[in-house]
Image (tube, rainbow, N blue to C red; front, side, top):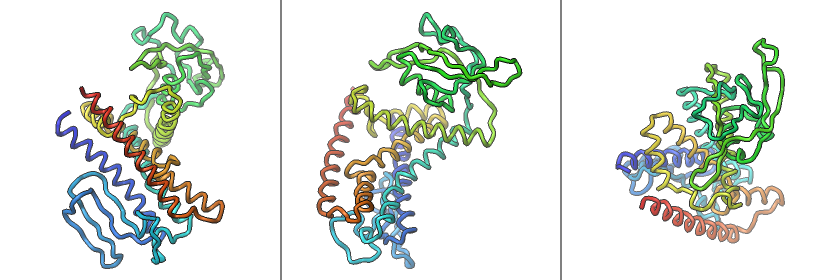
Length: 355
């Protein structure tokens, strides 16, 4: 791992944290919450500007590690404030918007990056092209179970698939057992796939890092790009990544994957360097994945995360009474401590993997 790789990774992480904080900042300004500072980067300030109109200090700091937005009592909600524009004195729906804005912006940025990836790379379909021998990993191929060239795969294991990414993900995750595969087939020879069929298909499998995964033994056709199908592809690739994050957490909790499968910033830095070596679009794809990861994880209802704060606001909205500030602050404090300990443990695993 060279210096340039580490610098690119730092800038990428910094950018994603920056847009996260930018989401909180924009939402705070739009809802009338008082903002003290908005910082690009962390650490000692290099340059700054104090707005006479808003009173907000805008600054650029030395370390390119994202940024932060400082709101009136936003960082210490256990401390009451007499300022009517303070975060804690706003209506619950306003605080909810500001709280979820960071994660939502990360999801939007992930989609925009995915859109750039789709525009700059070949767009595959779910239409079977052929069954090359080099992709066959078992004696009996999927062709033997009813699939044939020209079939458009529309569902796998009962789940609708819109893109090749969704198709490959379903096969990889669930293809260790026979799956019901739904296809549309042209049976009249008129070029229209109007006949819906389904087959129980056994996919080839392979082992990666001790995990058994399903694979496909066929290639698919590419397609020309139009405005409509590019937007369609970017949207469903992004929603697929959201599902990957969520289901990966479930797999971690249920024990399908061990804790060693988790990577932190140190481990991801190596992946960023590898992606950079393959070109701009693999790099953008990885950053889109990380951005969507960051957005989803921040909205998980756990203490110290935006999702945990969201739950307390929802409780207030439902019961018309807030949870006492000191209790909420203690819960977030415990959550933050556990999160930091977990982050240190993951960092230890990442460092250990280099040796």
